[in-house]
Length: 253
Length: 237
Image (cartoon, rainbow over all chains, first blue to last red):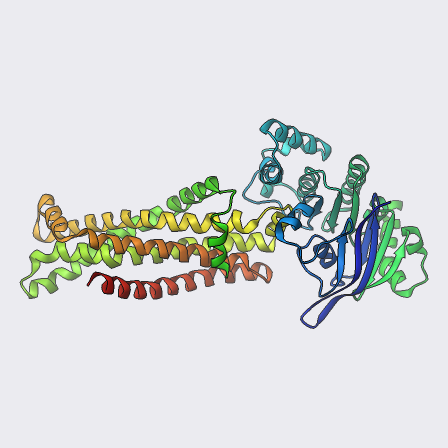
């Protein structure tokens, strides 16, 4: 299996606040990895470093064996064409309709005909189940719908790697489950590798094969989710106990 | 550095003609009502204020000349630019600022799209190109406003007024006034974009970007005007 992302001894600090410290991680092709951690432990920073939005202070990050650091912008953009990023807020362009949001990356960075673009837009909207929202403005969509459209915009370019930054934050448990199942379905259909940053154990259980837990910017756990939940580590037990109780409660309910 | 990047990016394809046209239309339409009122009032007030002063020296017949020179050389360009800064620079600051804090600019960047070119270059160019047009429009309205003031006090006929205005105006009076509006438009676009593009601290930062864009662009307009007046006087004499 090819290694898609390799994080090598990465450290990153903002002034005196160290958010990542000597972190190393490998993600292989086809893997779906969840990154857990308390707020401010550098999960989102790690995603932004992988896609080249931020640069680590120390260490290296490789995408298919090529370092993403210190690349000229055109080479970095070539690499970014292979990566999809679903932001926590979905980051839909406010001034554009759903159709324009989806067409935007296709028109700007690929040479598709109008017919091909239209076909792709219709297809992804069917995949996320929002065909009727095609002419809506983002402001008129609910939180869950925005996430779905954000997901549609992420997959429309058929990336090899998708980075999800808290895809279910702020959603109710039913919508969380729907979005998580949708992510899993798309992962299988598109055969992508994914890294999911979340606090949500339900989402992680549905979408990922492997979990990574960060504490104070360092790797605290790496392994299967079920092993994570059975761990004797006090930090891990405290971190997940409330969520497990909540999950059991909603399952019983 | 932010503004210098504009000169590097503006010549590199793809050219954002569609975006520039869209912004020019938007900015023109948004600013039109307020600059229309401003234009008429500048002319009216200037004529009403100047008439008694000129009358004291027996120079009332120079009123159309004085009004037209003041409006076209200085008041029209500067006041239009200040109104434009208040209306547009804050709008650009707030729009780009909210795009920054809601990660829309990051979303463009990770999609391999150059957000500076798409968002900033098109806005700066639109401001630079639309302000001279608005200034010509304000100048015209100010001259019409001044005529109404003169008509009410002296009953001067339109033909005589227009003749006096055009006799006193030279091509050299019009050019510096219009040329400097390209600088002012550039200032409004680049300051608004800079403040918005570099917004931090969430929604508080958006408000701060919007306010400081107006303050900074207004100050820069006045400062650059002073320099350009000096340069113009030096070149023309």
